[in-house]
Image (cartoon, rainbow, N blue to C red; front, side, top):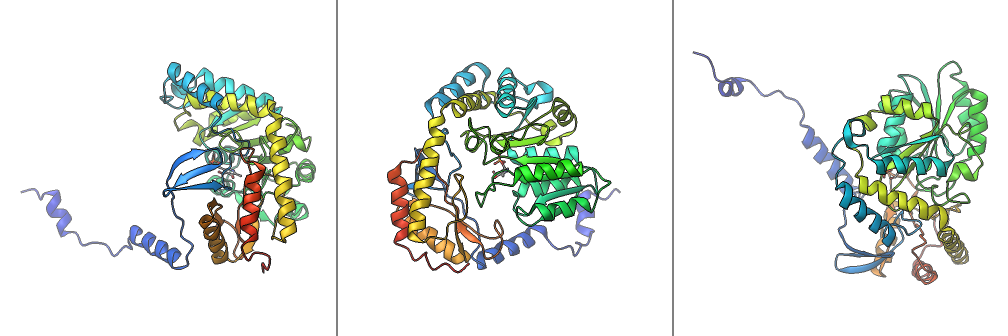
Length: 408
Ligand SMILES: Cc1ncc(COP(=O)(O)O)c(C=O)c1O
């Protein structure tokens, strides 16, 4: 008689393998004990820079909607109109039948804005960076990166099996030493244009000169520069007058200053053709909703033409920095929308964030492992959706807290 699979399974001794979920639970408990756990907050309403959460209305200084476009009625109308015609989902990957005219038109607009030959949409910035690295780099090839680069650039190098070398923040000499050590291999140097947790701008001109001397390819992730920097908001590479030749791989996201979601890579036609063939995060995923592409196209037009948004943002940045300096707050050097206050200790950052929330302000504390140990901070972000009175309210609240004696 044949033994049933149930009996066989019952007879088989259970292997003494550690349980993955148990291990994860232990790691989570460790994080809770260290008071570093991350928590979700449900937002039930949004109005300008205000959110409604937990039954309270809070003035936010933590969104990446730097130009205040996320709720612009023209974007919403573009979304609705496209959804009426094209539906909600794209229905498939770009290479199957999901690549709609809305996507193609947005890609053209992004290429033109950034002064590149072509652009290619990805569903998120995280996927764009993974896809680019995995398409460009082969196992063991050097990928030189700023230590403070966004997590997805670091993950991308690891996914590609590249040899990841991280230089101290903005240290071009150290980057040069790392590239020089591997002179015969293809090499990629990748940097954030604007650093996401610090707000400062990479030394792009010097890095471009280094890459040109070393025959390495420069990749800039301009998630926080696009829309904010450069005369028509074309970003940090344009502000530094760096063309496609000097920054051959330009990536930026659509979920920050453009107020939408998704990302793109811009560069030569041969780069884009290569990504279409080899970037797995482009090939094996559903194309972004066409209505989102239409709304983003509208956002590109507004971000390019409505200079008042950048001017207002810059005026608010100046106002905040001036006030913070007068209060002796531990400001970090930044001229972008990201204006962190460095508090050092994670608990201190959490306590400060809670104290601000008690006063009706939402400013999140950023703690290790997102930032290095001892460098916890309040990541304050400003937006053209803010008014001067909002910045003053933040400064008044900060003035009421014991922040000037920071030991960092
Ligand atoms: C510098 C940088 N690159 C990439 C990303 C990822 O982009 P996305 O949110 O579209 O995945 C982010 C943040 O989200 C970022 O700050």
